[in-house]
Amino acid sequence: MFDLEEYEILMSGFMEFATEKAQYQPSTLTRYKVILDDYFHSNVIDKVERNNYSEIFSRERLSLLRRKSNNVRPSLLRFLYFLYDEKFIEELDYYQLQNNVKSTFGSEEQEKEDSVEFLTPNEIRTLFSDQLTYKYEYEEKMLPLICSLSFFYMFKQEDVIKLTLSDIVLEKQRIRNVRRTEENSDLVEWLSLNDITVKYLKTYLTYRQTLLYPDDALLVMENEPLDNNKINKLFNCFERRDNKVLFGNKKVHQSLLTRSMMLYILISTNGIGLYQILLEQEMNTALDHAFNEYLSIVRTENKNELYDRYNIEEILPKKKRAVDVNVGFYSELNDVNQKDIGDYDMNNNRNLENSKLTIQRMVRDSKISRYLRNQYDNECQLCGYRLRKSNGEYYSEAHHIQPYNKVHRGDDNSNNLIVLCPNCHTQFDDLYYVIHPETQKVHCIFGEDDQYHLEMLAMKEGHILNSKYLEYTWKLFEEKKRTLVSKVVL
Ligand SMILES: [Zn+2]
Image 1 (cartoon, rainbow, N blue to C red):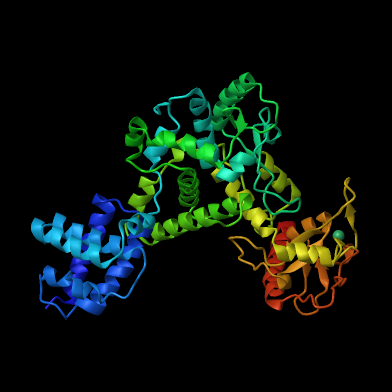
Image 2: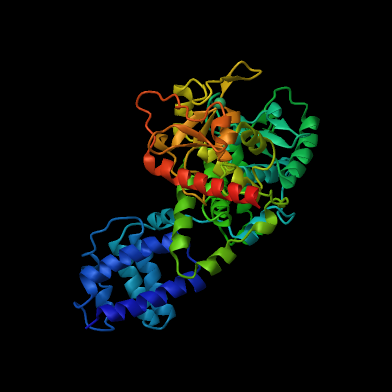
């Protein structure tokens, strides 16, 4: 009988074949395996004689498979191809069985729909080299720029179309994030342009001047602003024979570029880059595909090889020297402040290594901390001060009692948060102040010397501090006190 062991041997062979020889996308392979497992477990194992592939892939048996997803047909066909390639089945049988699958499951179109592809690092390098062949001047000036906007900034076609001349500030190497449509959106407003894009922009802008086009649309083709049809026409460039071979016959289009970049960000940041992407845009299909692909890679056994396969570091913008980060004995240095948002916005949001920290900080400026600061009307819970800024708004900071960072692993919820002015915040961070876990009175490390020693924090109704956080930090405070005393004695 064809038993479970037999199936598992075949399946591990198929997985190896699929990743190494056929190089299927890991997420695609995961979907195939679900279907094959289902079919073999319910309809083949212990039901068919060993090596009887004609029976395993007979129309009668295939029609027992109840699944109707688009992946059914390609998963069975590819498994069959593997059996043929590894000489489990003869050529003539192979064609017969292939026909059985094809006549039992849907049309060829369904087969194509299934594959969500990504560009390889080599293909990306090719894309931003001078290897592409053009027919018209507008193609040569615009296509590399549009590819660059779609890849590095993950702009969709509609975003690219929206761009105006004033969305580009070349001197500062910035481009407006046109996906951000509302004033108070959580998305960042500006993105930094990398050298590759600046180069294409300069070339294009020089060309655009010669068009004498009066409107402020950035991208102009055949003397009209760009629209979806025109972009598609530009992308048809890739269908020409000379260009097509450069991309392994993959159909290059805007969403392929966008999701490839997303995948590379996720891989090169071990997933943390998801936050970066979400600071620039809302969740969408491209991100969904890229994230699924990333998760499938993470779950794959030989993921290190896959990481290498996806390594595009050298074509991403050059890394700057990493910022020194001092996560001290007790510190909330990693918490968000206005400067971080400014820095992120202005400088290095493409610099993955540096921005990782900024992103972590920004993510920490969570809804809950904003909500609390609002509840307290930005008034310091210890000293009552409301700091006013030049724009007339008030400013306060949320302090995590048990620090919300890798070292101390506090939580980001209101039971671990208080609202402070920057001065008091610094002193709490320094463990100059601490809250007693039982009395909830503020203690100063120098005791009576300080005016707020043994004061109570102003607490709004319903805002309750959890004693586990207070106890955690109280211990740190006592430890610090001991080390201070021993220093004084020495
Ligand atoms: Zn204060």
